[in-house]
Image 1: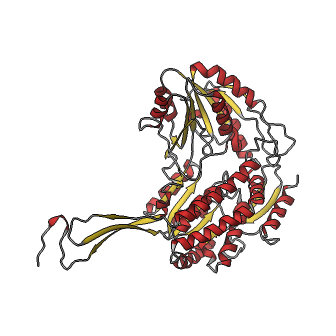
Image 2: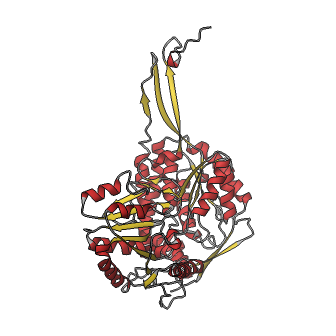
Image 3: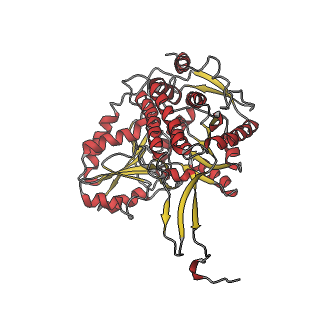
Length: 515
């Protein structure tokens, strides 16, 4: 397979003019970046170079800020339902190009095609959600203690929202932020991962066409491709009201410190060390299927990937045997082929991390029971056999997130509270699950003394969230919430109003101040 030819065909299908994509870095006029670096982009599938992007400079970023500030004056003045209509049109464009965009995600990131298509569907879904939301940005009315006074609360846009996205979901997580931020009245500047710029370019191109057809300034949505210096500039810039950053905990802490130093707002979606608890009476057919998908989907490169499996001792041997049998049959290969369920790791650094973690956990006493080797696919990408390791929860390697398909198999004895304590005994707090048929165990898991994660599921796995619920986690996961529920409030500022419609001026708390 010639992945370069494939990406050229995809861009042609979408309508992107030939020759644009090797040099694009900023989103206003598709101009060449002024940075010194050239990113050589290789497909994880076979390491074929699929294009080059000249990095943007901080001067490019300042130009986008200026354009965004002008666009904000136009965009924020539109009624929210009118802004929702623009997002609806974008959702229709995504429907039209779902197949090529899904292929592009797979070629550039390496996830299997079903997941690539699913990611584009997630963009479509959040556009639908945002359209409805545009008519539901509700405030409140409150009762005043003073005669002939009315109190109310309303919400206003923030201004410029900066979005830093990661390679593993190159378009979906951006759309969670951009669609909601936009209907709330904000303008957005997107810095995608430099590992996956072409999916961003394709999405930006289609969005620009929607803006142009509606005679709206293109600076409502901007794109800038660069290294960490661009992220640092975005975090430090006083005109960026909110920085939404998805990535490692290390990166998120750096963003948080920089944004906090100027008293800005940050929304952080960081690491996960997610566990599934398999209780004594769990339905193993469901539990095994969910575990395998959670552990090997996207080759273990999801923030919600299942990394720890905490199994009641009475079911441990059966779970272990069934998992090993499932892993030994996993079809590993070209993610564009329908037969493959596991594609490649994104690059050599990820592969090295995979093997280093396996080496370290075995030094601590862990036992590798299947996988953990390079997979022979006949392709040049970083294909590995997903690994299962018998381990203890307190091992240092188990406590850390390894962005690769390693599942740690851990036994517990006693009541479910023991398993919950083990699940919580890590620094991260993103996603968690329990498989049980006992109502009491399920309710304990969901109670305030149960899972300490932002996502807690019963009889489904840790991976594969719907856009209707707020997505995010606690502790080292950063505390941010994106996507559904009332996550829109992160992109707006709250304002309390008091209106005196009388002819006197009573003070609150009955204070007298006569002059």
